[in-house]
Length: 503
Image 1 (spheres, rainbow, N blue to C red):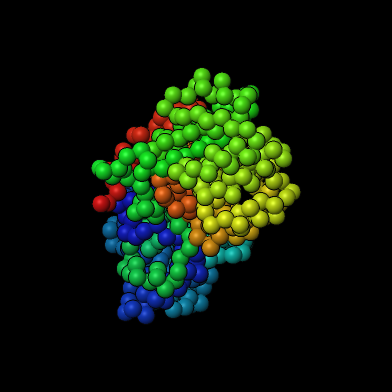
Image 2: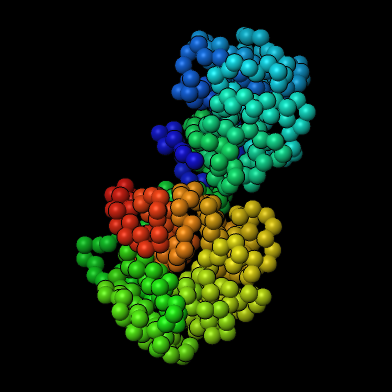
């Protein structure tokens, strides 16, 4: 997915179809007319079409019976005036159109054909203005036949709001759905634009300003966000000229036994590269030698049993701790986690620290509930199922459910990673390249989270920023990536990021 940033006039908020409808209502209440909103939306669609194909191109505009179709009538009018060969097809009876769509159909001065899948040959572009993001039922009849015909021809598709048949809230198709070359939406993206498979079905995304004031967002109370610097950049930690290593926090990564030490070192190095002033690997006695062999700027502290970890974390300067990578599954890990939860450090639980509580979520919840300091859980789908059981719903729904149930910030990992906090706020990530799916990359992500928490970033923002940095570092490296490459790419990513942040 690519977002045309030069067309993005707003922020990172993601609006459900219902919330977008509310934004329209509030804009009208503030003095805009709904007809003008539709006019601006249609102009934005026409502008996008003009970037895709030159004047004289044969363009089919497929209009539905609602406001999405009204946007299509506006686009068709402007393209016709710009010397395009416009062929407008309407699903349903023109006389049955209502409201603004009826008025925009009246203003269109060309022929209106009935939608027919057999009239779509020899086209340069199809504009899909059949149905918008609020459609909650599968396409059927002529609409489904037309979608199949367009797909068979392979004609480029410009979708209005979302490809017809795609649920704008979930990103899931309702039966047949077009795969768009580009999608133009308005004011703000919707969750379905960034959740998979919706992100891929939308193609390149363009967000158009149609005049809705951003002030409407305060009344809507948005809780879902597109993950990126526009969301968390204001709270991102930047080294101060008068700062020193102790002011940048001290992260601890807890090592597994001698045969499984690499994962903790990956997390530790990531925490250091993410900006933590000091990082220590806490090592069981049998792993001290192998860890010492590999560590230089990262410190090493031996410990024995949960009591030893408790003693180490009693130094409150050690303000973030990562447990899980390579730790082993079982009661011993549960006890280490419980020792960490009794400390004042921010706690990041990954991998074995999650699986060790499989079937016993109440035990983990009790430890989280007893503290007043941040906890972040970073499960992938398998770990999520082992801890929370219920795997129904989108990644956004499941992450929110887990955060509310556990009392922790939850990072539900995947190609569309979702970060959710117990209060309901959530961010959806879209920058992870496919080569990030490699052994050890999750250990690095957990380490970045710990490193940002150590620097004082709040857990939800820290987890969201870490997920984005993780994806950016992988994209910067490219194919062939292995986990050890990720921390070494962070300096370049951070330098670019900090250079772009205000202040």
